[in-house]
Each structure stands twice: as structure tokens, then as C-alpha cells.
Image (tube, rainbow, N blue to C red; front, side):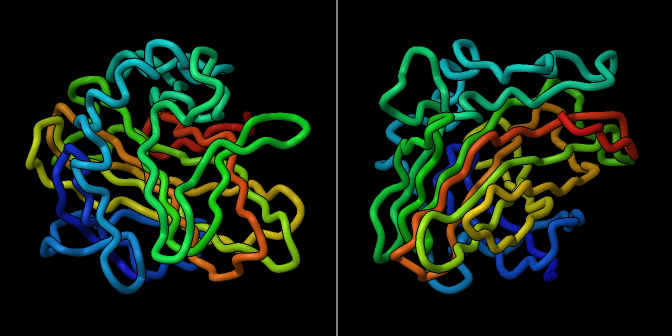
Length: 253
């Protein structure tokens, strides 16, 4: 695994760095990197303001109200809740008021692929990622003072499921980032997991203990397809970020 950092706008006018992370168990590498970097191993894959049309902050507000994660309370305070989920809107892609779109997510096509889109399995709706460097990103504001420059306050465990549908395996990289809540604030790389998936659903998990300011923090997650096996579709589902006290790993949910 390579330590990586990134610098980009809290509007998610992303030119974000993720490089090669070959393990599902990842660690934090706080700091800054020069601008002009991307979620791709090579080249630049920016998510521009023209694509988003509004800031990531505006983008996540409605999905968070209408489609809060199910099965576990959303984190609303700094320390009283011992187990809660970061309020990603539509992490299961089952938004009740927008079934034909992927509300709460910013989508970017790869160099030679279409935009990610809302797909379906017999059981649920899923994020369909059709080709290399297809990218989806979302985020949520953390309760104020959730982070600290001195020591880790919480452990954040990222969980999702992914599978391929086709003759060849698919590769997905999931990256967790943290930044300020204002335009132009630095965005820090926290951790990532790089996984190869086949026909069966694969549970992907990694965790990080944040120790990075500011007190008003925006947590971002990026999901990017890394392989070039275009006959295979990559499906992603049940994306969630679970917060526990520092050093505590949540049970299976």
C-alpha cells in the first residue's frame, strides 16, 4: 500500500489522488499533495463544478433528510452515540423519492466508459459501473467537533458489497477522505481498499481512526472501477460508514 494525500475543493471539484492500495485493511496518511491529481492511477479524472452544478454540500442535504441509512441511527452528536452511521444519503441506492436516479451521488464516466448508473438485481437496486475509471462519490457533514488534531476520537469503518457480472473479474477501489465544510478547504486522504471481485457478492471493509481537523468536517467517499474488463459490469451496493469509539470495530450489521 502507498500512503497518499490529496488536496481539492470541498465543492468536490475533485482532482483527487488515490494510487495503489492493495489491502482492504488501510491506514491514515494525513497531509496535503499538489493539486491536479486524480482518483486514477494515471492521468486526471476531475469531477468538475459543471458536472456537479451545485456544491457537494447542497447535493447531500436532501438525500440525507429523505433517505437516511436504515438499520442504525445516523450520527447526530460527537460522543454520546457509541454506534451510528455517517449520514450518507442513498448508500443502498434505494432512495424512496427518486427511484430512477442515484440521488446523493456525483457520477463521472471513465475515459472509455459510460457514466455509472442505477442498475438492478433480482433483490435490489445497485450502482452499475460500466468501465475503467468510472467514478461515484458522495459525502456527509460530520457532527461538529467529531475530529481532533491531537488524538483520534472515533473509528470509522467503511463497508460495501461488490460483484462482477460477466466473463472476467472486476476491480474496485474505495477511498475515504476528510475535509472542511467550506469551498477551497483541503481534503485529506484517509484510507482506501482495492479489491478484485467475481460473480459472487464480496463484502469489502476497511477502517480508519481520524485525527485531522477541522471541527466542521465533511467526510467523502469515492468508488472507482480500476480494471479494463469491459465485457463485465461492476455492481456496488450497501455503502455505509459506521462510527464507533476510537479503537472499536463494529459487529457485523
